[in-house]
Image (cartoon, rainbow, N blue to C red):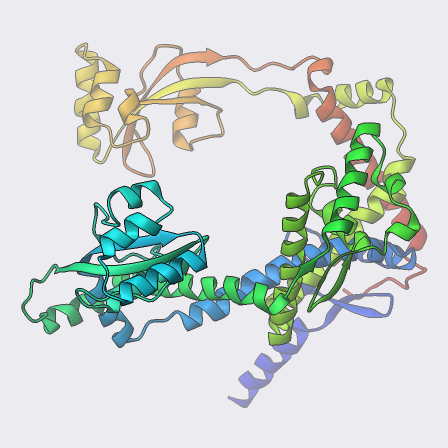
Length: 518
């Protein structure tokens, strides 16, 4: 046993041995990406050291951090909202009871709190609810019907929180004024109809129903949307954003002028303009320089000629910053998955930036170079032969042979496919479109042994047995250079990036003390 334990320990330690050293840092086999060889990985590590030395990592970090903030928010919400949304038996029972109710209501709806309070006082003084709705409601349909809704309210996860409150009310009860988006609502319960009637709820049936996973999932989703709505309501209050209309107007006018002159964003704003404050919040001051950075990451500043759009964008950026700050305080970004992903993203983005700055500029191309590359790599651009195939697929070999006999007797392939096939294209008479020889496994192989219009013999497939018919053949060909020139240019550059990359690697591997250990 001791001998086996020693062997096990030795094998474990051997797996942890470094395979190389770059810039005095050990490289382990587990760190090599699956899509790279050891040599390719080591080359990337040398490039990364070069990129850091030239300061390129700082150029990509701002954009990466912004993009990664969204991932931090997403992970935090998924983790914490999901945990908080696990329903208890009590919550499932409440949801179950509410879902069995249909509630008829009468409504007073205004867009002004003062009018709502006047209406509410008249209701409290005993005046007719319908008359008050007709007098104060701003919605023409509600005014006309004296507040009576044509359909009952039923419980659902998408029901606004203001209207969910009515499920705790009794017949004849009137709510306090409730806010929903831009409206204020006073609700009176006219009638409550229960799916289980006026008799007592069958508790044993309820407990059986609420124990089902699909029911708990519905309740969890409902509870999750409630938490998300709370966050959306809470964040603006916490952020306390105060936009500066004068400065935002100045910003939008500058962007508009830039559009008209087709000037670049950098020429529009002078240095003294960059520190103009657009908004203040608990996150601090949000300046034009912040706006330009965020807008550039979002695709450019030229969409923000409208002040309303600019204010909405600024609010979103501040709220995202606040939410990210809260998530980081919780520590989501320090989790092993996010931390590793962040490091990989920074490294890969820096490597891409390095290649764009150090390698692509030294690649010079002309039409003759591209034509030579095309001639030397013709197989890369050949369009393979394709065959249009119709398929009849059945479970058993016996059924396949019986279907073949029916085809020999003259029955149509298309009709039989619609009748007996279990395979793709059944509704289209077996038509599965054009395929290449390497596609569809045994079906592709069989198709390229047939002439146009010929049926195959029954053959085995992954799903059973098949008979196919080739209805058309498109021969393979080599496209003209002019037709594939964009692809040739891209492949040529990729090839040259590798060629020049190898040279840069050879010139710098000693500088960073590259040593392969195994």
